Image: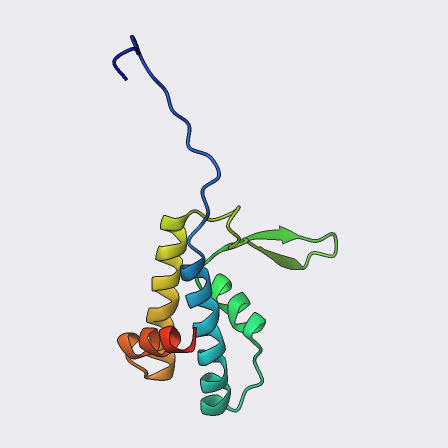
Length: 117
């Protein structure tokens, strides 16, 4: 380091997204879906709940089709499309909503998901 004279710029590459947070999300989805189905006599799938959450949180662009119908083009929650801060915020919002919908405390939901993961 003593040999370096002037400004140094470093670029970090090859970082991996927090897969635990993504996994926690999907484990929670798999726990909440059957609870909602039982409580409200529904037949939601995990993917349905994922779509519902993106709709509820306004994570879509509306596209008007030539027929005049409005289609929702949902935003991706992939590692490429969502940084960790956004993913953490998304997960926290989802957990709060699911807690209200199911009547299960947020802490309980998180602990159940951690045990199931």
